[in-house]
Structure formats: C-alpha cells, structure tokens
Image (cartoon, one colour):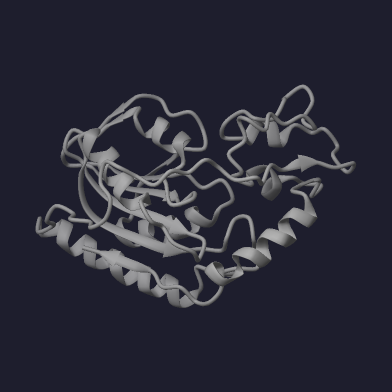
Length: 251
C-alpha cells in the first residue's frame, strides 16, 4: 500500500490546501507534481491518492488532465481536492471525478476549498487561514477513519458529468519588464513551456495558460500583466470574488 499527494499548483495555493489534507490523512506519502512531466505509473487497489487541482474558469487545467492520464488507478482510492479563488468551482470536481474514474480510480471523497486568488491577490487574501486548516484537518481525519474501516462509499457528486462549461482561457498573459535578468527560472518552471529558455523575455501567448507561476517565482519580480487591464477587470469581477466563501466537503 502506498499514499500519493498528487497536485497541480503553479502559485502554491492548491499545494497549501493539499498539504493540510495529506498531513492529516497519512503519516507518509509520495508527492507527484503535475506542473512537471509525469512518468507512467501503475497503482494498486490498496493505494490511496489525494488529487488536487485549481479551478480555472470552472474547469480542471488541461495540462493537469494530460499528465494525470499517465497514471493508471487499478482500483486505487482517490480523494478529490478542487481549490477555487473565491468565485465558484462549477464543473471542476465533476470533470476531475470523471477523468479519474476513466483512469481506473475509485473516488471516495471530495473537497472544494478556498485559497487566495492566483491572479487578483486582493481576493481571499491569506486563505486557507487558520479556520480553514482546522476544518480541512478534521475532515481528513474523518476520511482516514472511513478508509481504515473500509467504509468509504463511492463518491456521488451532483452537477455536470461528461459535458462541461466552455472555458477559452483568460486575457492575462504575463510578460517580462526591464528588470528581467534573463536567469531563465521562469522558462524552466513554466508548466506548459510557454517561455523561451534562450530568451526568457519572449512568451508564446498561445501556449500560456495564465497560471501565474512565472510571476510568483521570479526573483526580480520582473514579470506581470498589464496594470490597467488588471485594475479594470478586478473592479468588474469584484462582486463575484468578494466576501468570505466557504469550503465544501463531500463524503
């Protein structure tokens, strides 16, 4: 039997939630980072996986799904974790469940948790906070008790299965400014290879998925989006992103 913490977390918010859940599910586990290439892996029915993804426009990021398809479940049990930036998660959990079940996983529990918005940091700032972490830790222990007693039923999520909302990406495409030192860290860490390793100031906007990883890791703070566009869209989206949204737990 093995335990796996599988996550796609370009800016660290999803990883924060995943780590709280994983620490309270198991004493030991292996990490699989979907921001990087994933070698083919075949699991067993005794294995347990926590699979965590952010919600991008109400969907699972396509690159995360692509890399998950290198993992064969063979009956391994899966706990689903969708992290959303204080708006909605819409079809993210159902798309993740459908994908994992196609890959041979048995989905037994799910979480939709709030984390600081990866683009507009002024929304859900500081989340998951202490109260979130306490709630998530308690829920993890409930899941573990069910797993230990072999009492986990198959997950039954309401919502759209098989047909999901259309998401065509966002206009947020980070670019380098004059402070760029050309170190190439952003190019090496970009999940989709959208930044030219030979010239990190060049970004292929068609490839960019607006995950903001390059912005969050740049040691010179030399990458960002158009300030006027960001300000305008933040004001437009404020009604949907404001307030204190809840975590949702499914067991």
